[in-house]
Image 1 (cartoon, helix red, strand yellow):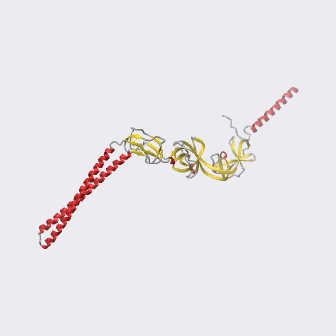
Image 2 (cartoon, rainbow, N blue to C red; image 1 turned 90 degrees about the vertical axis):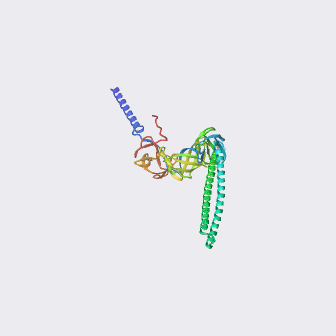
Image 3 (cartoon, helix red, strand yellow; image 1 turned 30 degrees about the horizontal axis):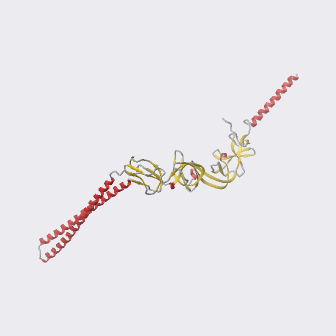
Length: 394
């Protein structure tokens, strides 16, 4: 009898222990346990809003040096990386028959000049004859009035005067035509000389040869580039900024530039242009950033990272950006009060690249908000504050 009572007491005790253990697990580790959260306080201090983008080094002023007519490359005098001056001969094309055409044009111009001189002489002679004929006709008219000559003789002198005038007009027309021919011959010579001059490719600026595109002996078409010359003073960054962050970017804002080849150093820069057209596919906007001082040894096409400072606030309240949530189409935070949480709508300002968001309205400095939670929170949820939330590996 005593043994049975002992066994029964043992089973009862064990059952109570199991119930207590299950209750403890349910309230501390199970579904009835408070949600584990990490907290942060609303802090007051300066905030700097920035936007970030990836870009490449490009030349704002780049010149493709090439001919205006099809030709064959005779020689190339410079190579990639060479420093050149304005007007320096860079390459020369085979002029083919352009030299002969210049000589032929000069001879044609000389011939038309001779024709012009002959026409001028003919005009002078015709004008002299006209003056003499007009004077003779006038004298004959006077003598006819006095009855010294017949009417037929007076009419003959008038006819001679009219014929002399017509001859003078014809000589003037021939002179004008000769002068036009001479001008056309001179224009032809000037045009061929320009073509001959274009066989000599010279630099338009003080710059650096960025590309040597063809070699001697290559036949090229009109407009094809032989060399590429850039103005190194115009190097800048063509950066791509997400459209969602590009709204606050404008010309004149300071920027930091980090080159892929010199990742430990940041160079100062400034936004010099914001493109009007955005890329609809990548949803990015092009922002051009210039160097305050151009780095030595920089290469065109090098990848860079650009950070543009868009706003700077001296003394404002802020919370970690991870604390911001959206509930019922409202931005807000889960505020921690007396072991429980409540959703507090807030008005948010700028957000920094290091993950802090400005609180314009809705919280006071020192208020505690939930940054991370191990489960989805609901109003009046009991929570347990922990230093960090450890996620189990899946």
